Length: 212
Picture 1: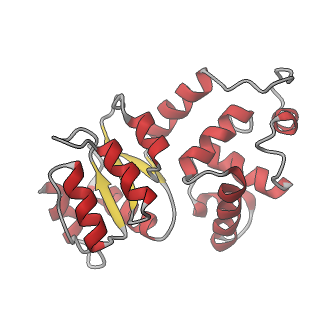
Picture 2: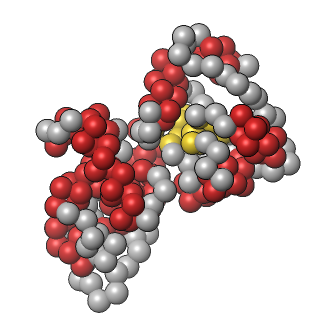
């Protein structure tokens, strides 16, 4: 109810439905085709992970997951299921409204605390690359990681910034390009990596050594 009140206070946001469990969320997503779904993880019946996976596979909506400060144990599964971002349940009203707008515009949203914890966990257990030599040089690592090879130099720069959890606007400022150009590069990077979300690409960046 609190989330609904916050969102409805924004003139450009309309709450079109509420669901008490994962199955209801899937059914409403199919019927209403909302731009954004705020998804809890622990719910009665079908949980938020399986609901997110079903919704993403049907391309019914983008899913923004709400998690606790210490990271729910299922957040990693939400990432694999295709969630476009993660917010803390303690998110401030202004940040929540901004997050919904950004996701609706095609951007990703990652609470800084969630980003650091998630990527830190993935980085702690990197996927080894066959025949590679461990190095701290990002360029060297990128050259021997087959996932990165198809990317252009500029796309690698963009992937590096994704690994830092930056938005399109922030990537544009960091690389001195427009936000629209950054968005185009992000789309190409996701396509070449076979990633459905920015967070999945960020994990690749961390594992490949492009982002510390």
